[in-house]
Length: 403
Image (cartoon, rainbow, N blue to C red; front, side, top):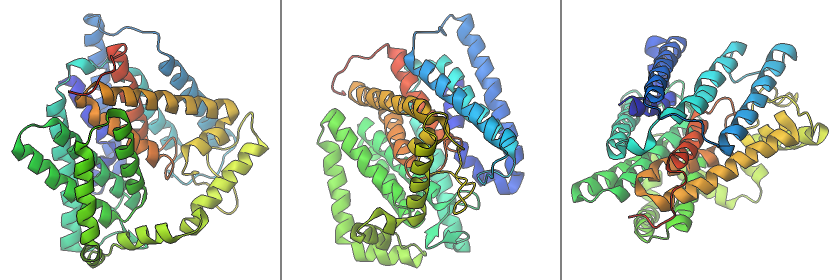
């Protein structure tokens, strides 16, 4: 029970934003992380008593610890010594507090979880219920109160969760329902999960963000490569065919809620260059590459200090890792990605019960190329740690086709 509760709480990090208005963001995070620390220590105590928590030779842990330690010192140096301009959080201490509690502590304490003893179907349906609830709240507020937060035709989930996060929340619901569908034998559950997948796609459309669509196609492609099954191809082809047949009706429906998602997709396909699609991200990539060339060994600030876009993240973790930590840090980060991608491939072939967490990593892998900073996307690191520790718990799993 403790293991499931820890995983549920870590998974729900961004969903805390739904409580910010009522209780205050700072208060919610203090209570949230206090509960997690208590559960970590309680779980670790039980594992030590049962002699179930041992330090195995694990290259991933050593590489991750080295990389995150380097990044932690970069945070301290940039924020408190260089006194850089920063715009992710208002308070400097928030960066340190969140980095330790949402990234460093899970790196250590998720190792104590008994992944091979978790009831995954129950865990997944609990997560499904939670996601459906929050997405329904966002949709209900949209219908009853109108669009509260909209920027350029893109809708936010709430006052603190922006359109790209809303879109990825819908995608998480989609891949969770897809994993449940692939793991279920009952017709009623299959129908329910197909309905939830359609509802999820509607949420993605309302959010009007493109990166969830890119992530979805990557997940489907990676899945085909790993398991070579036709079932998902049939499901995906049917959904895509329905969308294409009713594209005009879908476009009108989404526009009635203020979303120009379909238009944005069409524009994306018609643009001739990345710069046309997103000049801000293109500028940040150019600034990041210039900074890498200027300081390839010791690195530079983890946030852009260019006069054009000062104090904001590069919205690309690979660029950020090389900019902030030089060639060594960037190389370590790439190594973490390659190790985790390989283990994701193995787990997808190993057992269907790991489909969702495998999909989740693939989603946040793509997410990390489009938005946020290394310090401000804890669910990316949560998914990375899960894949590696699940793999480690089988030491290593035998490769075989899923049952």
